[in-house]
Amino acid sequence: MSQPSLIRFGVSIEQDLIKKFDRHIAHAGYDTRSEAIRDLIRARLVEEGVQDPGAAATGVLSLVYDHHKRELEEHLTGLQHDHHEMIIATTHVHLDHHNCLEVILLKGTVGEIREIGSALASFKGVKHSSLSLTTTREIH
Amino acid sequence: MSQPSLIRFGVSIEQDLIKKFDRHIAHAGYDTRSEAIRDLIRARLVEEGVQDPGAAATGVLSLVYDHHKRELEEHLTGLQHDHHEMIIATTHVHLDHHNCLEVILLKGTVGEIREIGSALASFKGVKHSSLSLTTTREIH
Amino acid sequence: MSQPSLIRFGVSIEQDLIKKFDRHIAHAGYDTRSEAIRDLIRARLVEEGVQDPGAAATGVLSLVYDHHKRELEEHLTGLQHDHHEMIIATTHVHLDHHNCLEVILLKGTVGEIREIGSALASFKGVKHSSLSLTTTREIH
Amino acid sequence: MSQPSLIRFGVSIEQDLIKKFDRHIAHAGYDTRSEAIRDLIRARLVEEGVQDPGAAATGVLSLVYDHHKRELEEHLTGLQHDHHEMIIATTHVHLDHHNCLEVILLKGTVGEIREIGSALASFKGVKHSSLSLTTTREIH
View: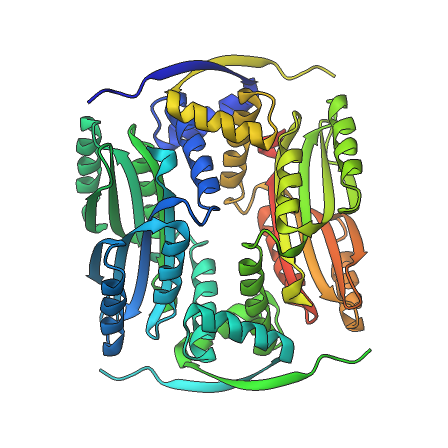
């Protein structure tokens, strides 16, 4: 497997600003400025990428729900089967006597993933949901 | 298992505003206004809850990384073992020839979860990360 | 001027959840649940509204910049004149010896306002920028 | 006035990633990579800075409200006078027959500014509010 070819370029910056950034990235655990800056760049590109409903993406949908609502689990399973080509995997854990956390890994376009996320979040019994999106083009 | 006791209260609202809301929740898939409003309330309380670093929480951390960086997988595993009491489960999928998605389910305080999230995100080879937090107090 | 006509509807909710919400809205300063819920509904509709680049909106763009960069002020003024039909008003304050805060009130579509915001943020000397958008359809 | 002293450092990056970034910053209007990267760094530091309730900050609070609610304007004015040492300036515009936009520039700690923002947002008649915060330490 060939490595991606690296290039090197120079950045000019105020001494005071880079000192604060160095402190920030040391605390966060980065080894080098380059690594931290590459992460900032990718995060910005992904942020922009997810504005485009047609962009190819990966989604991580977290649902906290009351597992006493039996019809809910059937609905969840049903909806996932209807979109099985978009579901990569699901993980399920019991949080406490009442609540489960279901994490659903999805692939598709940003728009498709948002639509499924919204449909699942609106089910009766789902108490909280959140969706993280990463566009794959930017992180290749 | 006893059901939580429900109460009922009245909301007064402009006709025009509730019409727009009804259209919004129908599109999102809600069956009733009550369900949609409970979700808005919980989302707001969670939003506020995660401002408190000491609040009990569940975290879903998504990491996209280059699996050719062997030392990374060791680091990831090492850090997870050091905090094994906080790790509920992890799910791993291969996105393409280069990239893996690792989703780590965590429990702990908001502050502890953010710290681990930041440490994992800064590893060389991690290309994108995102963290969803839910405080458990609000969704009980 | 006629008042908008109000309607009233009932919401059923877990006792425990409404108690937490009551505490939250009392702390925030709300007089009534209805008022707090109307604000949640409008915030959600606006959140959704600003996803549509064609929606009519109002923007508040905050720019912190170094006022020693003379060419910057000319650029800012130039760009504002080129889009004068979108600029409602600007407010300018001196933050300290180096920095000014310029707040620009804009009207237009979501897409047009974002474009201007991005163009102004990228000027050399602009150190920080942020854009708040409100779609006017939802708050009428 | 002496200029801040600049330093220069090198960043190594995948060729493919920097190409995407160059396209992004050209579209956004940046002249140089250095300028775009300094903005990313400052944005990240400010993002972190506003997590600290005690940090010195500048806030831009936007309120859309119904100006037919007379008591509201009195309340707004009252609250602003009670905190006059925190209010830098306010700008007021008439959006349409019903709605006004009031933009309030504040200085204080992050915590103080959030508290005032929340108090003003909860007034009856305020239909939408949003708060942008910039910590001044990071942008000096």
